[in-house]
Amino acid sequence: TVTTNVWAYYGLKALDTEKTFIFVAPDGNQCGTWCKDDEKFIDDMYNLFRGDLCIDESRVFATGFSYGAIFSYSLACDRPNIFRAVAALAAASNIGCNAGTTPVAYFAEVGMSDTLCSPALGRTCRDTFVTRNGCTKPASVPEWKSSDGKTHICYSYEGCKVGYPVRWCTGNYGHIAAPNDATTGDNGNTTWAKEESWKFFTQF
Image 1 (tube, rainbow, N blue to C red):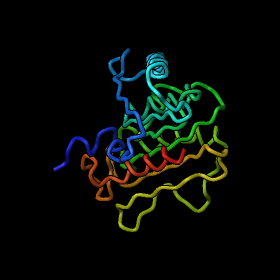
Image 2 (cartoon, rainbow, N blue to C red):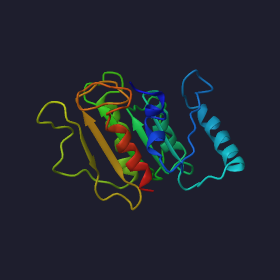
Image 3 (cartoon, helix red, strand yellow):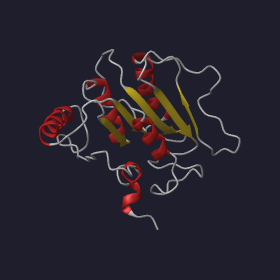
């Protein structure tokens, strides 16, 4: 049986065994789901937290799945003064990305069989930060490979600006927030995605 706590905050809260993180899960305020207007909502929340909580302003992160990933990508584009890194779990560029050059550490995963936030859409978002962060793709690593048709692959880009990595993961799965190498989601018990996100954030 999977308990709610296993997958709280995409599995990250359970991994925070030292209780050093403050977790916040807001709902999109302006559009019923996340949209550009909600960036002001994020600004207001951030200013509230700065005043009321003891936070490390150099270590503020965003993550989300599907529309949450889309919005996390938009925040990385538009609020690099706030967010140190994001983890986008199946992102696309629906909300848009303001032109800019400020780097933000960027982790993303997408399923090769995802028909909603497709690999092509995910790669477009990823490549925004490959460019901003001054990275190059490892020459020997393809988009996806697997000897058994299941096992995922992750790799980090090379040559990125110091402190601004880009990491990419994919595998043979669909629109799933908690993918595992059996190609099905299981609410967070065996997914590799939570450890990848956690390792990415906690390097800072």
